[in-house]
Length: 242
Ligand SMILES: N[C@@H]1[C@@H](O)[C@H](O)[C@@H](COP(=O)(O)O)O[C@@H]1O
Image 1 (cartoon, rainbow, N blue to C red):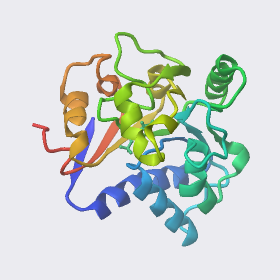
Image 2 (cartoon, protein in one colour):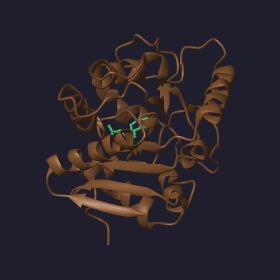
Image 3 (cartoon, rainbow, N blue to C red):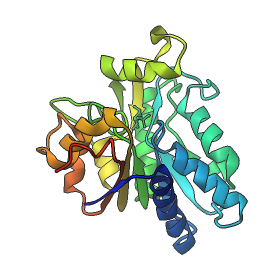
Image 4 (cartoon, rainbow, N blue to C red):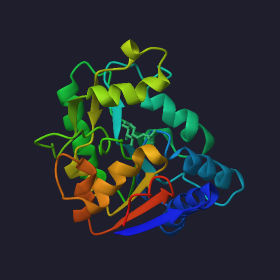
């Protein structure tokens, strides 16, 4: 595991974006695993900027997102589908038929999970999986639990996650209580994982994930078993690391 802690936000962003751009330049057909949340926002803005400047093209690349809320139509402003369009897809030349996000509004959620896994299996593995981390150590929406699921599944969100994500909704009641998420097994199949974390709220989760025991109580700790993980942190998120 390679851990980098940055003093300057600019370096954090540029390093994350450069990892993706180098991958695409070397392999234009690369498969990206994408994440939502505030952590990758700067990286997405930089990718859009580099595309605008003609430094990279995503026409042959494809993407798979980690997760989506259950019950929100894709057009809902807080759906992860809308998030990805707003922050990345509308600003680069990726082909919309090659971007994939679980459909949290599907009539049959189990069938949706199975078909997402099938697509990942047939087209994968993901070359580079971007990840954020929840302050409880979740990755995607794989919440701390006695057991974790390998494949894509429907998850009941923990109260702390609902509260953490309430900042994006007008009230706590509006936050969906369930999500579809890729499982830890699917995440761990990526050739390379790039974990991004910023801010003091993430410091304990980062410490537990990178230097604590490997336990389902901190799903991100499973990343210690992956052979190719790069961790990009700001000083606040890395402040408890020894
Ligand atoms: N499902 C997403 C996660 O994939 C993300 O990692 C997490 C952290 O978000 P942020 O980067 O805003 O702290 O938020 C949500 O719960």
